Image (cartoon, rainbow, N blue to C red; front, top):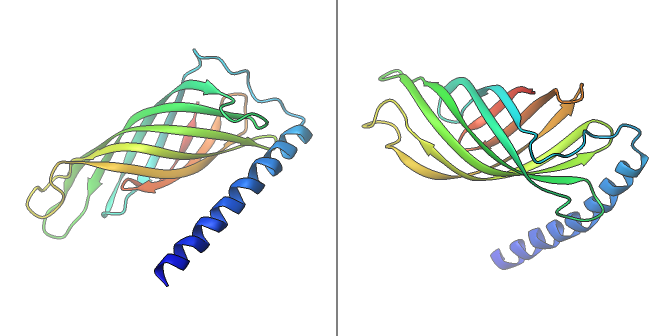
Length: 174
C-alpha cells in the first residue's frame, strides 16, 4: 500500500512537471509587459514580517543575488542565491524572548503572465531560540518553501512566502 501511494504521488508530480512549463511558456508569449532586463549586478532586497510555526513573530530581510538566467529553455526563469535573517519574538507562558533564523537558500523564479513570479526555495537555516532548556537548542536545519511576487512597478513587488521551519512571511521587494 505504501509503495503504491508513493508511485501515485510521483506520477502526479511528473504529470504536473510536464504540463506547467508549456502553460507558462504560452502565458509568457501572450504577455504584453516585458520583465526588467536581467543583469548579474541587479540585487534584490526583501523586507518582510513573519509569523512562525513555533509561536514567534517578527521582521526579517533578504538580499538576493542573481546567478543564472533561463536555466530551463522556453520559459522565463532565473536562479538566485538568497541570504538574510529573521528576527523573532518567541512567546511561551513560561519563558519568552528574542531569537533569530539566519537563512541561506537557492531560489528559482518562474515568471508567469504580466506581473507574477512564483518560486520554490531550498537551503539551510539556523535556529537560535531564547530558552535553551525548553525550546530549540541552537541547530542548523534544512529550509524548504515557496512563494510568489506580484510586481506593481518595474522593481517593486509584494512578496508572500511560506516555509519550514521559518513560517509565513509577507513583505515588499525593492
